[in-house]
Length: 274
Image (cartoon, rainbow, N blue to C red; front, side, top):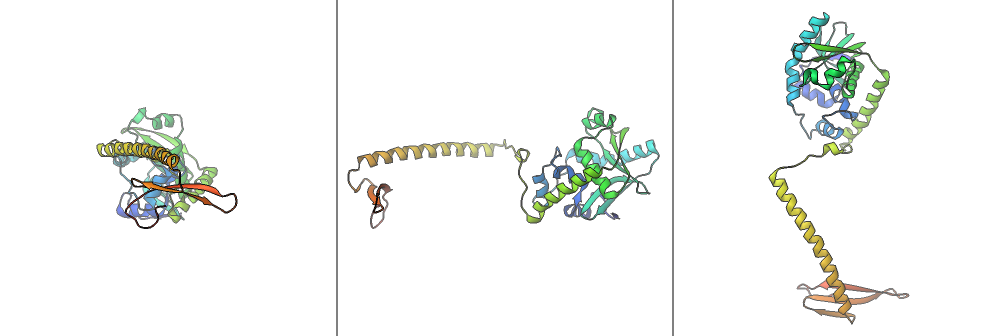
């Protein structure tokens, strides 16, 4: 484990995140993230998509210093933000003590005390996606405890989380499986959550035209098959033609020969019609 000099949010930090297995991505890798699927994360890791900065994310970045100050005032602990790596694994910490024994993870949910995150924290619990993120941070940092601090803009509630070796193993296994897709440039399985619903007018017009054309094509195939059957019924000789269509009968095989009928639309062609 080592601390690297990176300013969180900087261009260098974003480039760093592309190359490493980050704590904030662990839930997506394990299929637990409410916001990101493995396929969407794969797009980011392979340069096909840029990580979007959503309003909740920007709000969390804005409130994080205030939350850290509130936490420090409540606990008397001094926390310094840090980026840590351990092999291929990385964690951008909202804070770590000088003795490296305790880390801090801040959450600032939009609904504050009405959020599920706050309500669970009051009971000493974390949502599964946050539990995985915190365990990843503990795994990388080697710290003995993480204070998960949920902040409503003024005050907060803290849940102390201890390391879980069992969860560490699950995280590593999930990352190893996911990284195979990154290295091979092969997308992981797409889920229903990867479906993008289109409601714009251009898509609607194109979709409606396609549906109509598909139905017309299917009807045309059915009509053509019926017309073909009628032509075969009308043909009494081994080769007949007229009005741009030819019907040819021939037999395949010397023993137990089987009759085959071929109907051909005549175009401006030379040679035999069938």
